[in-house]
Structure formats: structure tokens, C-alpha cells
Image: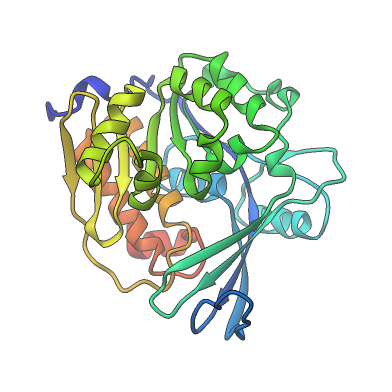
Length: 317
């Protein structure tokens, strides 16, 4: 067992499930020659619709790695909800059914020729979590809980945080995503998140945003965030791999094998799910980062934000 960061390895009971709280959405993937300038239009070269959403993407890889999980993501009523139910059924998965007039959300992803993605999210029921939705859960079955910034920023964020606060045995992984500053501007929610001392999972751009005014440079920013929240901080860096920072000022970096991406949709979510599944299996930081790097690279080689079971066996099996 590696010694660096050992004090911050999550203590999760053997066999405990991973709870993935958040969204199942429709990803509308548009391939464009370039992003438009302000006020300009571009013509989409190809459009596809995939099952997506942060919670689904993470839960998918957790399941494929053989670790038990539950997808705590609401399915509403409407065009996108119908599409999502069909796609989940085809994968043998289910999610939370909610009696509502709201549809599920969608995410329009613009993919440039180099595979980079830029997103516009149209929220739906997934940002409207209610406290009663958690009543059917037996929290004792879970060891790790994953939650994303999109849902915590929304009006249902208080319900998500209240559930985590009520179950202090859960190891909490917080993935703020592109809404990192939207959540950070809510002082009350940030205070609650800080008190929970979560393991942060974010990319290098998000790290630079949250640390602005507090630390300068990648290493200093990672060290500051880990010390500020009293837990490990995992930062993904694309082709440069990923790094885990710890509150005592130490860190672990693991490189990744470079790939030529088809697109990068879901890479961060997949990294998080694979990382948590590996930690739950008893692996240390270095091995867990390496496993997550491989999974994130694999999802960049396929279209859409999650690997099919066939793609998982072909690329990672």
C-alpha cells in the first residue's frame, strides 16, 4: 500500500454500493467545423442523440467494473424522458420514476474536429430533487455517494445536501463540473459542502476557476483546494493524466497513454466513476488514478458519453 495520501483513503465497507445522484439526460451531439462567433451561425455536419448525464455516465462505468451501484436520477415525462426510458431498458438499467409534468433535460454538445466538446445544457426534472425522493433508499447499503454541480446548484440542491448530511457514514465525491462557479457563488451551499469535507473531482480548468485569487499555478491551486476542504482533490488533465492532491501538501500524479479522441463527451464522468469503483475495491490512489485514466481515454475513442458493454470489453476488458 502506498504511503502518500493513505490518511485520506475513504473507509468504505466491503460490498457497499455506490450511489450516483444526478441526471440521466439526452445528449444531442453536434459535429461542427468550428464554434460560431457571437451572433454567427454554423452548419452542423452530423447530429446524434445518446443517453447521457453525469450520474448515468459515472454509474455506467461503475457497473461495468463490477461494482454495485444505484442510479438516483429522476425520469420525468415528455419527449426526452420517453427516449431515456427506452435506452435504459435496452441496457437493463432503471432510474427513479417521478410523477411530474417536467421532462428530462438535454445537453447539446458541440464537437470540434479535434474532439473537444463545448456544452449547452437545457435543465429538466434532474435539477428539482425533492427530499421525499430519498425516502425509499436504505442509506446503510451505500458507502460512496457521487453528486455533481449541475444538480447541487439547482433548486433541488438543498435536498441532495440534506441527504448527505443525514448520512455521515457516506464518503462524498463532489464533481462540480462546468457549474463550479455557479455553486461557489452560493455562500450557504458552499458552507454546507465545506462542512461535509468531500473528495473533489474536477478538471484543470475548473481548478483554475475555483482557486483564482487564492493560489497561482496548477500545483499551488491543487494544494490550496485540498487544504481548504480537508480532503483529497483529484484533477484530470486530459492527455497529461491526472493528479491527486492531499491536505498535507503531498500529491500523486499518474500519466495516461495519449489517444486521438473521437469526442471527449463524458470523459470526466467516466473518470470519476472508474476512480471511485477502484477505490471501493481497495486500490490505492495511484492504481485508482491509472484505472480511471484508462477508462476516460477509452470513452474518448467512442461516440457518446459512456461505453457500451461491447466497447468496454473491447477497450478495457
